[in-house]
Amino acid sequence: MRGVSRSESTSDTPTAALVFAFFMPLFIYPFPFSCYNASMKKFFGKTVFPGVSYGEIAVIRNAESIVRRLPVADPEAEVKRFTSAMAMTKLHLENIFHRVAGELGENNAQIFEAQRLILDDKDFQDSILSIIKEQAVNAEYAIAITRANFTKIFADMDDLYIKERIADLKDLCKRLVRILQNAAEEKRELPQKCIIVTDDLTPSELIRLNHENVAAIIFRHGSINSHASILARAMNIPVILNVPLPEDIAGEIAIVNSQDGYVILSPNDEEIKHAQKLINASIKYAKKLNELKGLPSVTKSGRKIKLLANIGGLKDLESALQNDAEGIGLFRSEFLYMEKNDYPTENEQFSVYKQVTYAMDGKEVIIRTLDIGSDKYLEYLGKASEEIRGIRFSLNHENIFRTQLRAIYRASFYGKIGILIPMVTSPVEVKKVKEIIADIKNDLVSEGVSIGNPRLGIMIETPAAVFIADELAKEVDFFSIGTNDLTQYALAVDCHNADRDIYYNPHHPAIFSMIKLTVRAAKKAGIKVSICGEMAANPDLLPDFLQIGVNELSVLPSLIFPLRKRIRKLD
Ligand code: PEP
Ligand code: MG
Image (cartoon, rainbow, N blue to C red; front, side):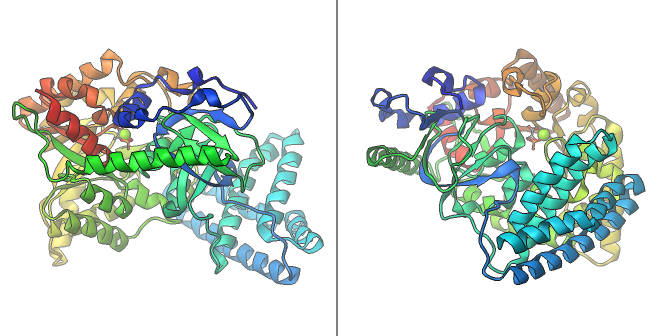
């Protein structure tokens, strides 16, 4: 455990600085730092999303389901629960094996065959069964202990092949636990308004949490620029990371003050009273911002900036509407794929896209096609989802892409939709997309399905796309600049790098130059251009954006009013 001084606590990265700036009024209640002794119950970290909250801690270990040791009255019934989960897991693995083998070849499917072999292993099964019976405990706990023991055994082996099975074992045990928890009618819910503490939570794991029950998130590790952090910010709750909390803290009460970058474990009455005071102040501030509802986002000299919302699904829609979004500038459709244990069907996607389009009532909804890969991982696709990203993945898995495009085209009949293609690097990709679209339109029309006329746009988020923006602009109706990936790829900062936050600098002059080049190419071709990466939400950059001719920004719904406030103060 490491005590951290206050000066280390506040991040100097642009994003943290930015979110701090939005909540400046909260600093009228400065935290009485000096009255706290340096006891071990106060821990510092970096702000991901500022706010104050308190509640009971629920620990999610290694980004997995919460496993508790629970005594069971009837171990035989628990054994049955385990054996039926085992049968179900086997079925899942066989289905996935066949699907992946069909789509990606047998080589890639072997991961799932390896998992099935572990599941069939007698020692593995016996270990779980004997823990359940001898200790009269729940199956999830028996699996967790068995997994820990087997991991140690595998790790100690000289055989590289066996060592590599640790990842398969982990995946298998996660699947078993998830199936057990879903199978149990009484779905294991998080405690009411709990504080999640986790080592590392992937975007797909984050998306599966019951958001309503989460009051704050503490990541022990991570990067403020990861997609897990971006997604956590969208939840509008305090989020903090790199907090060196002790291990055994499940069930304890904690205060998370991510605006000042600290966590207090087992707070006393006075500390809770103070936190409550800060919470009340932030509610007051949010109400004040709400007074901007219905007002235009125009500068004093009359320049208008269109403020659009970034959403990840239906759950963000209400917030987009409440915050006066003038449209959806970025619907990250991959989150639909991450919420589930399997690809969403055409009808499932159609239903979501249609609902969003209806709700936006004539305002454009820009749906970005699946952008899987990098840190956005689909568990049911296994390793294949880490291999390539964005449009490359979609063109390599045309059937998945076609399903999505059909759903989008069907929904386009019900409102104004734009299709946005991620990670484009070449006009060849865009031409191929257009061919597929033409084909899909033909199919739908010949099936008698009504369709609309969506605009087609691309993300400019690779340096390659910036430097051929003139050429790309001839192919599409609009550009959307993704500064998150543009920064990562231009500055050679991989999302898995340690110290990513040190090197990831959206304020590097190269990034602004690339934005300028892109805007210039768009203007020359007479197409629209917006910015939808995190940089778009930085109010300090507004004058620069206006100067180069950007007048559409797409940001988290909760950041629309703070931006509008700043726009209205600009000359
Ligand atoms: C970006 O790269 O800036 C962007 C908006 O896309 P992503 O979903 O990858 O953050
Ligand atoms: Mg991106």
